[in-house]
Image (cartoon, rainbow, N blue to C red):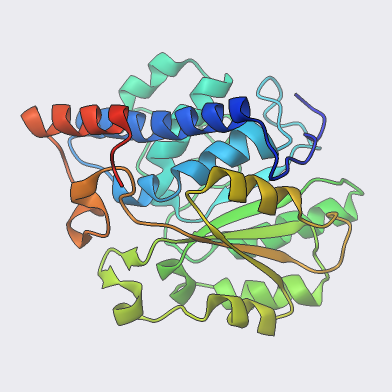
Length: 289
């Protein structure tokens, strides 16, 4: 690693699609496994962005696990930090740390908490807590890149419910003002937050028009369609441009497990006994939708 990957296109080969699909399934099964270790965890918010994690980390990001602090690496800001339980296995799989360390998840003294800690986990660029702050941090990272003449990109993943929190729109305004074409916001539009459907709690739509009003170039895609994701990421304009980019990924919260899909009951949960075995079998068969 170290060189920017060749931008993938809609004609991405079957082998790549199969590989990314298998890695998305890996994100989901590891999330279920680690949640059992902890006794509770976020299932559905991870399942909605499993394909996004797969495409970003196995196809798109310019990173080097042997040099997690390499100045030229692309940055990834997981603003919806409660999905960290799905990110940790990816980082372990890529070699940032030994996968066996994951078995300490949420245990006393473990670096792996419910939200990521950039000071404890190699490969994590942002420590999250309250939502709504990742995009403003991304703007700062992007400005630093410009000032340092580095050509990295900053990818920031937000939830659609998160758009009503923190500093999201102040950051959107600043990214446009400073002409940060090296910022890519990714909205995991999975329709649900912890308090219910986003449309009922605080409507986020029309997301495209709102970002466009702040000067962003918008893209909308099926967030579970790997070919479509490869195409939209591959078609992003050069990061030296002056217009920030946003990809709105339409997803299903809980995607991959029928009982969890668009169910408000599974934002946080715990599977036990036969339910655990049934869900792991369902994920293995890929029958979630």
